[in-house]
Image 1 (cartoon, rainbow, N blue to C red):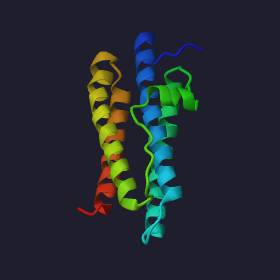
Image 2: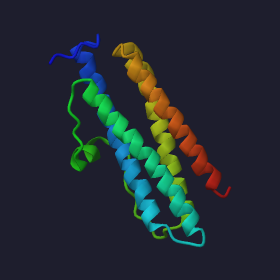
Image 3: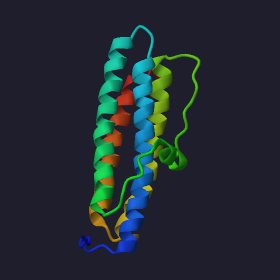
Length: 158
């Protein structure tokens, strides 16, 4: 059935493509956070294990919402790992130590990178694609990532 949400097919395709890139970044960040939760070691193990678990739980909900928004636009979600890795801006890092400070710093940097790229997309969605709803949606993602970054930052030793 035809999608009649008053956004052109070309603009829906553009939004869905950009949301797909955001989804890839969110999924890789989710995976890195889960990796930290599984591999954390040290005297603060239990505290950080639970903290990272809460963070990847938040990311999981965001991932689901992004995938559903792509489907709402009438497009399919390419949720295969190979597809995510081909468009994400994040890389996995090998670490010598599985300490909380290293994971916290890396994840904070990734959240801040994602915040900056989401901010770039806000006016693109609104002005180029004429999709205020998805512009607002990614503004909400920025707000969530800002809060998650604050939590990460608050755990770091300065």
